[in-house]
Length: 143
Image (tube, rainbow, N blue to C red; front, side, top):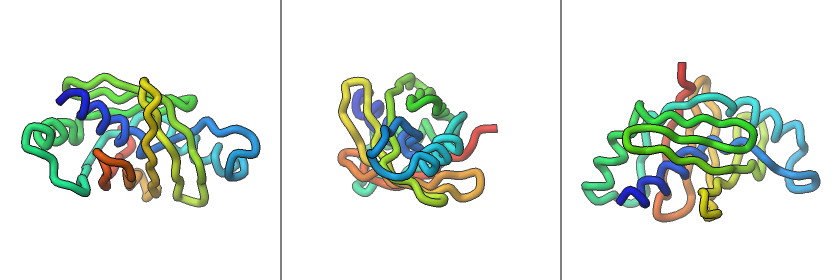
């Protein structure tokens, strides 16, 4: 069960997907750099609604993370910490334009998850695209 929760937390963390990207691999560097700057720092998980209902034990674990899970982004890497959670990985932005971005999050084993989202004020609304954690959520800049 913890393994599934770690996968979810990585996907949620990615919601913000700052960046590594290399030359010639997508959008102009300035859009990627801007997205990275906006994501750097600490965020809290406010909500997550999976596309498919979670079984009760997993739902309870996810609910325990709401407003307590902190996700920190810096230099193309993330760390997620919350009740019974301490994980991390790397991420990259695939496209960035205005307030929106899409990218890919990689767990420590190298598995990748696609995410996209939009900045709205101090929040980042995201969509996690890959099972088993496909769904929508909101991160808020930590104070």
